[in-house]
Image (cartoon, rainbow, N blue to C red):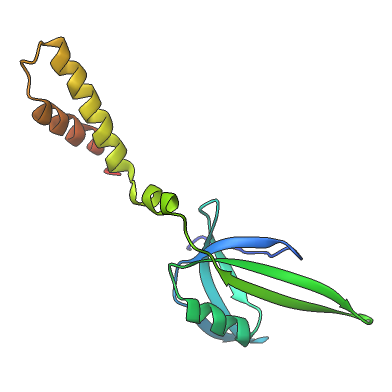
Length: 148
């Protein structure tokens, strides 16, 4: 049985920054329609987020997957009742975040391989080919690490 994701629980008056991972899933259960989005929080966890109403669902759907956004749940006293509002704002990703996400494990393995092959070349007074040593090390290390 697949592992169930945790729900994104919004605390009152506290913003959560998430990235929409998937297209919405609309379903129906005993309580009526539900609008489910899979989101990724700032810690990298995949969470289930149920849009509380159709208006929020339409806002999230319009923003689309892959976008980073800030969701704030606002709770106000309204006479004897409590009124809950939601604010959704699309967040611009800094260039550093984008570049960091493009850097994967293969990149760091390759950099380490080149650094090590240069050390080997220096040890043997330039008698070895840095590119060949780097490639050989990369193949061996990437296989040892499960391919990624």
